[in-house]
Length: 306
Image (cartoon, rainbow, N blue to C red):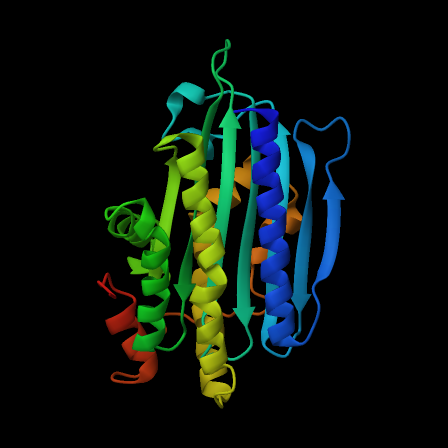
């Protein structure tokens, strides 16, 4: 891991953020607000980033896409649960993370993240570097063709890196984006990987780029198919109720949220993933046989979509 390697990763991530937000702004018709930030001197966590946010757009009620590049004196527990030998190690982390919450309930919410973490073992030694990320889709209404398209795009992006990658990362995504306290999936999944360094830096970075580069192809065709569908109060109520599950996962289980908050990250940027409006209802049960019911019975279950 060299300084030039770090710059290459940083350049890719800032370019990815620019490409994605430009495409989303063109679709929505509203520009993102760009908020460049830096950690104040004297804090344990140092670094900077760019948070880009679009709110109250024609297509997206809230769309946030953030880049961050930070260094810290000690890896937080959320980053060392699979690497206990690095507990307490100084680290460097950078990534792009996004969550887009659409206005139309027939358009699914989407999440994508690609990141690199490097740490120096306590007491010295060679720098350990790994990549992580993925993307997942959270629909409010069930459309088979959307789920198949999203998963097929993920599989195609990973195909050059081995036949095992999509099945492995798809299963990892199903396991990860699961609300254990509800015994329920957050959405229809996608792919997720972490602590990835197989094949060395070049291979791991290339695979991470492939995932990041596939995002727009995976998501935009779905938005374009659904954004003009008529909807009313029933669909909006269901969307807000299901958004509650999204909030529960991000605050209770998500390692990225925990990493950011535990390491002293910028709360405003970390929590941009929250939807602008949400509701909870006690013991809510959808009408049997309804589209809302079919989402839970047929879609929020582990399936082989392709």
